[in-house]
Image (cartoon, rainbow, N blue to C red; front, top):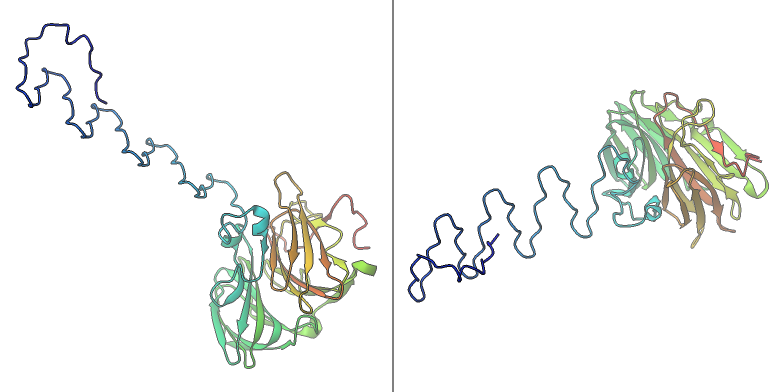
Length: 362
C-alpha cells in the first residue's frame, strides 16, 4: 500500500534539505519510499499484495477457489455426482437422462454407458456394430457382461471357449441366444456377415463361468392386457439365468400400446418389497420415422424427472424415480432393452407401484 501523504507536512519545518531539481528525494529515516511513476508499489511486510489489473486473485490458504466463469464447480466431498454429467456437461439434468442416438457414442460403440460416466456404481450398456468379417476384443474388467445379438449372428471367444450365437434378423423377429462373459476376462466378438450387438454389463464381485444361453430356454411372458399388453423376454432376469449382479430383459410393445406401466420404482432398500437398482433403457422402433415417449417422475424431492420423445437408438437412464409409461406410436412396435444392477446382497427385482396405480399389471 502507498502511505497517504500527510497534508500537514508542508506546515512543519523540516531539516531535510530540498532535493535538486529533477532528482528523487531521499526518504526520511524509517519512512517508506515513494515508488517511481508507473511502478508497482512493494507491499508492506506481512501484507497481501494487490493482484495486477485483470488477474485472478490467489485464494487465501485453506480457502476453496472460485470456479472460472462458465466452469462446472467440483462437487463437495461425499456428495453424489449428477448422473451422466461427464457425457453431456452444461445441459439440464433431464436432458442428461435422455441420450439421443449418437450422443453417447465412443470408439467402436454406437452407445456406451459405463458406471463412472453415468454417475452411479453398477449398470453398464454398450452397443457394437460390426461389418462383415470384423472382430472386436474387450477386457471385461470388474464387470460381468452378456453379449446379446440385436441383429445378426456372431461368435464369442472367452476363457478358451468359442460360443456360437445364431442371433436373429432383428429384435422384432425372435428371441435370441446370448453369451455370458465373466469379470476379469479377455473376450473377442467376431461376425462373418456383420451385425449389431448389445453388451449388457454390471460391476460385480464374483467370477462365474463363461456360458451359452440358448434361445429356447429364455422365459417369455405376456404382461398386462388390452392396450397395456407387451411381451417380456426374461433372458437374464433374476431366477432365469445365473449372474452375480446383472439383471436384463427385453420388452416388445405393440404399436399404440403402453408398457412399463403402471409407473413403478426400485430406488429404496425395503427387504421383501423393494430393491435398489440402477436402470438403463435402450430403444429400437419398427419402421421409418417411428417414435415413442418415456416418462420418469420424482419419487423424492429433487429426484429424476423426464418426459422425452425417444427414437431408434436412444437410451434413457433411470437413477431413481417412478418410471413409466413407455408409450409406443400407433403403427410402430417399440422394443427396449432394460439393464439393471444394484448394491443389494440379493440379486432380485423388487418394485413398488405408484400409489395412484396400485392395480399392478392388470
